[in-house]
Image (cartoon, rainbow, N blue to C red; front, side):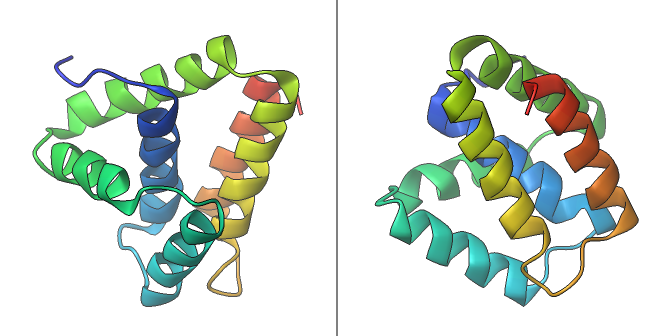
Length: 116
């Protein structure tokens, strides 16, 4: 894989993984991500850069990236960091008023992977 993951880019990747669960990213989801990341004083250019890299990847490489991002968070974040990351992703999933079945399946997997 050609994209090196950091703590931030792993979160960015997982945000995209959750957001795109239903095959598209809604306006509400985009606005929720922007609002949440702004509240965290997060550099939106990092997020946009990650999305640019993701957009250029094949489906196969994307799946590998998602798995690597999960592993990165699992191996590098504290229990509190994993819990906060999960809460962030859950908030984004519910931002359009409903958590889809695909989003719920991913959240259930992350809850198990992160031990939250």
